[in-house]
Image 1: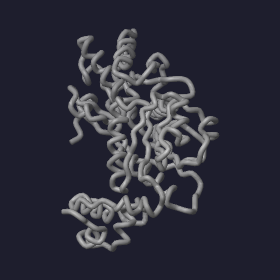
Image 2 (image 1 turned 60 degrees about the horizontal axis):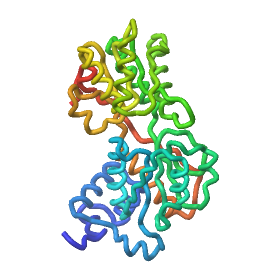
Image 3 (image 1 turned 90 degrees about the vertical axis):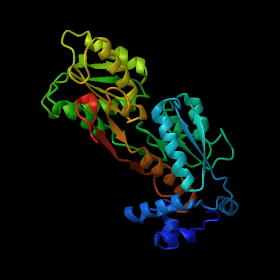
Image 4 (image 1 turned 90 degrees about the horizontal axis):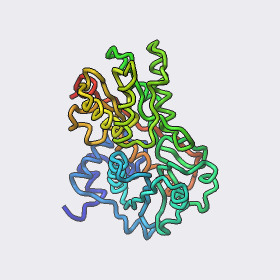
Length: 339
């Protein structure tokens, strides 16, 4: 179907044109059931906002930038796909930047210096410190993604990492495991994610009356599969090795499972494993991986809508902290399958 208008979507969905406009603009004054019905109709009819007309009217390019530290990491690749999809429903194009966690590159992008035509930036910072970010040149709209704590004039979209880590660890404890290890400890200014997940892990131990054993928390240089394997090998070499492990991302968990199997042990019989991120491979690994699943689509939608709201609204309110949902997906690596 070609030349689909906003009016066509409204008639097909059985709502007003204003309601369709509110859904397209990401406004919150629409019920979830209505929003889903309108979005399904938009997909069915192939409706796209008239970006050219809007760009002429507003003087904007309709291009936003998404900057992540590691585009080859599955989580960031999947998040980027979700951001592209969310931006498309708003008639925007997404320019992807891979910063490598370089603070100077992150600052350059956050300041709008990487591409002069972009309307705003979604940034997942890794190395950039708060002082540099707060004093960034330029006034380009900025939305932060991820768990690092910044007190700057920018909206911030994240999930509750402490609560998620607490739930992951509590799941292992509820299985009767008592030597629950943690893989993913990091130190330094760029380790907010690790700090928050470690805090949730320790809170779950405390709630279950299980003493914290520092020998069971292993530091890693990066959140990659080899780092997870090395950390798991060190844990298995202990005189009293763990019977479960919470890994701070799925790549660490994949490496940990490999190390357990290479020792002739079984997951989950000997060691139950939980990861974090619910990347695509976790559903198809053997065993399939129990993991924390952030709602990436919601994260992307919140971020895109927050950025475009800053562009659209004359009344610029204070920065907002927007939290997306998460859930624990139980699969074979902890002994059960959630269908």
